Amino acid sequence: MAINRKTWNSFDEMRKAAEEGDAQAQSYLGVAYQNGQGVSQDFAEAVKWFRRAAEQNDPVAQCYLGFCFLSGQGVPQEMGEAARWFREAAEQGDPAAQFNLGMLYETGQGVPQNYAEAVKWYHAAAERGEPQAQFNLGVFYEQGQVVPQNFEEAVRWYRAAAEQEVSPAQCNLGLCYQTGRGVPENMQEAVRWFIRAARQGDKTAQHNLGVYYALKEAEQQAAAEGETEEDVTATESPDENNVG
Image 1 (cartoon, rainbow, N blue to C red):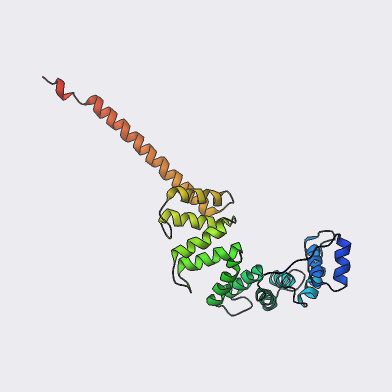
Image 2: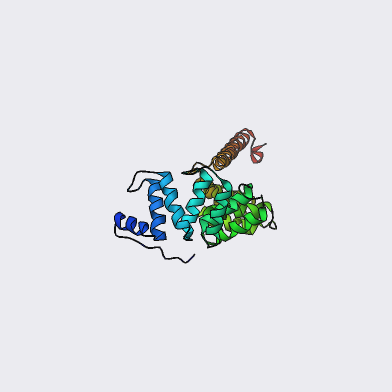
């Protein structure tokens, strides 16, 4: 989405531009009200400015307005309206809107459930670097749902999301390395990705690490006990060369 976003020298200058009808200024003012930056947080006021910009076809504002309807923030929750505004922005190439529209199609909220449409919009967003879309697309490829099962493609998208610190993607990438799905089996790489996910609180990765370390400890203990038994046997066995 090649859109040059404007900048202003001060908040008052931005507000003046918004009041004069500048769509990008209206969008930024909406964000300010949504987050309470420079003004008191006011979700209804945020929606007002997002709507003004969205009606001028500003894709960022359209995506924000879609989120307001999705979450019921400043307006009553209305999934159909969320889908409408996400679509307006998605068709202009906004990756966040493409991901959110894909999510609505996957879950059947505001639109009829349609996995093929979900994958279409996840793919569009993933190609533009949206990390959650990359993860979701990886899951579709790993499971072979709608798209042909392709572990290499799953790994490609898990890695893209994992490198942007999406913890479930890091965990799934670790599992791919552990099982050799889409990549050569490599337990060292698996552990590396499990650790990155676990540090972010991913419960599955934490569990996998716990199992890995428990097995390693058991192996080491068994090896140590085996060495001890060998030493004892060697001590107790007579030296055949000295038997007379």
